[in-house]
Image (cartoon, rainbow, N blue to C red):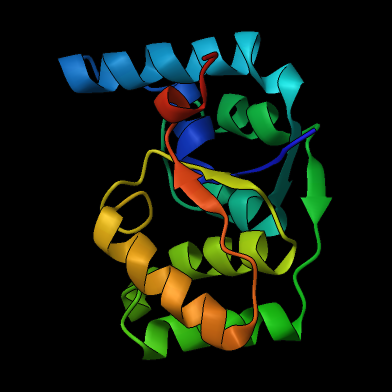
Length: 155
């Protein structure tokens, strides 16, 4: 069974409140994947996802947290934090968005097959993926496929 790391944007879009067409579509596809496809994968998250969901004042916070509440939590150790720092130092991700680098470091370190996200600026981005593969090769790390729920549907 392939492994999937679920980051913050998946829980957020599961309970999206914006009504624009793109947000509604992402909410639909997130919920479809969660109900119809999630059971085909070993799904994991981390305390980094939970911390991000707990921060700030946003609608449906409790409901968003409940989406990831029963997922397996992957450990975060000093080596993972160091990997995230390497990503930032090599301009893979901006320093002010440490969470994105941390999510990728967690998924890479724990050899996840996929990192599931709707963050197409800093994660599911072709230019970032190429740069990540090069960095992870140097670090001798696995590189998960960073994809949206649309890319992880039935064939």
